[in-house]
Length: 206
Image (cartoon, rainbow, N blue to C red):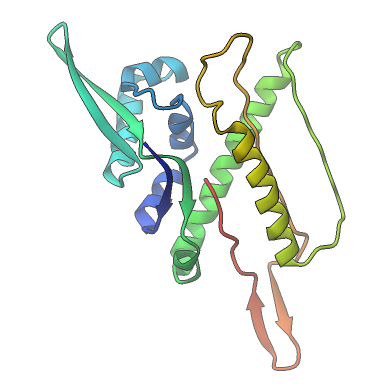
């Protein structure tokens, strides 16, 4: 498994714009391959449904078939994500057009829906731990906001680098999400030359 996979094809973006497929990718722990049956048991979903979405991820190279084993006369297929982190190429975003923008927005929504679902599950568990830090109404340039997110990401990547596996005592799984939202309107108008300037996409990570 690679550390990072850069997505440069529209079909790859479409594949991860489905919230259910994000859940499937999150079922993998470190470099441990899993079968569709194992994932179905984790998600408590029908095996056939998991298989359908696994095939979609395989087709675009986001998921790989890494092993096949015969058990009781049945071939078990083992899968593993192509990389620990998926990134969308910034240049591809700039030149992708409206269809890419729609797929990318859907991917954001899928990720947010998953975070939202995890949050409500966490709230239902009395002894669960949660951390929320909110910082509102700070004024930054786009460059400053991007720089801040990169610094936060760098700290988290360094700290979490060796914590992908459940190989220590007294550990429990955590999900962390960093979200930054501007309050700008969807587009701006440059009055001097009467042209509309649309906000440029950031370089997202999935």
